[in-house]
Length: 567
Image 1 (tube, rainbow, N blue to C red):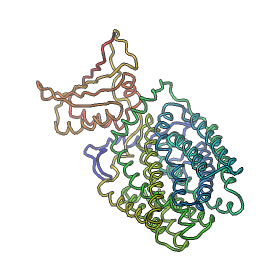
Image 2 (tube, one colour; image 1 turned 30 degrees about the vertical axis):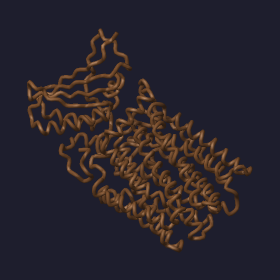
Image 3 (cartoon, helix red, strand yellow; image 1 turned 120 degrees about the horizontal axis):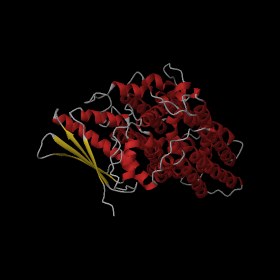
Image 4 (cartoon, rainbow, N blue to C red; image 1 turned 180 degrees about the vertical axis):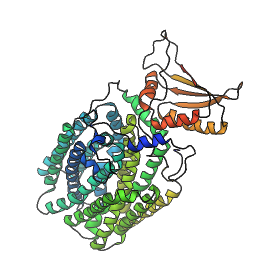
């Protein structure tokens, strides 16, 4: 099941019905009713561009592309303002870190907000704030008031808005396309970033020959307006009426989910092992271009553009390669391509060969991160999707930010080439660790949709239960007539499901007077959270685990709910 390595065999076979539902299920309609994404997409096997047939996805994708081009132009302008400063390696790395590190502090609360409130309005507000910060940076630069410290502070402010928007933006993707198009949509999302990476730096490098960085900052601010307009134009279907989960409770339940989802934890580990050493190339490339290769801003834009071009090539070919090799082989091969590019930045003395190696590195970067993103989007259920993606972004973007600071400081001590080689060695060790810590086989392949498993709890009319009542102790009595060791194994998996969906503790006991009787006991913080387990949090995968455990019993289980006595 979820603890099998990628390519392993499940101890408990997957239901054919659940497999079909996961493969052909439909997502939420963009306008409600039967005319949602699934109705708009042809039945043929989806290709790379299939999600663009859906109008809302298409317009949001185009707006994101415009904004991403502006972001990369802003990045080039900011880094080029710093390459002539003393301690340039540290400062340029710090500029990248300033845009990335806010995710460590903001992303998880942002995920809570995106799961609790309307994501459309939330995104419009956050992107509106980004327009204001970007505009301030442009104006202050134009009037000559931007010092390196001011530049880093305002870059940090833009990073905060990006961190606030990231979880919600990731979480809306499954609302825009049906499940079978999520891999293609994730590929297009990565392609979007990398088309922008190919275009933005090149355009910025040319413009810097004639204009000041203030113009690039102004273009970035204006480009973000496109995203605000596209988000406001999206007619998101109204969600069913439900009580909003308290923010602190939502933060805790999201953390419990990640801690008790082995497949999600393994994805996060693999992301960290890749991006922390891999961030050295992004952090130091401006200094490589300026100091090692003696290139101007146009040359730096060319190097960044090579990475972006490679990523676009990777996105175009990913769907075909994904059908032919396992995820493990795909991740190892793509990581090795990135190793070539990072090692080339340390060793190659001419720009022509380095451009070729950076194209290969761009292919590897896109394939690795698109595979991780797709896997998580197909794994996370709707109730915790933004919080789960927030955790992913903390590792992905925060790892790059921490890495950027570290590699900048290391480069100051040992030199740019040696720093890149050290990072490349660590990256190779991460690739080798795939043999011990691969992605788990079921991650991204189980049914994440809400499914009702439990009957409504019986409550005596004399007991007045408030959603804040708690803690709630749930006892489930099973009479086992089948293979007890296999029942125990299945029950342990169910215990992980209970903790993942809200229980703070879970245990299984055997009746000393009757060896066939086993009792699950788990604790949920409040009655309201237990009701969310009933109605919002259990998925088709949780049902599958429950059904497998009950296959070893021959009579209905008996459920009791124990609550604190009233006044």
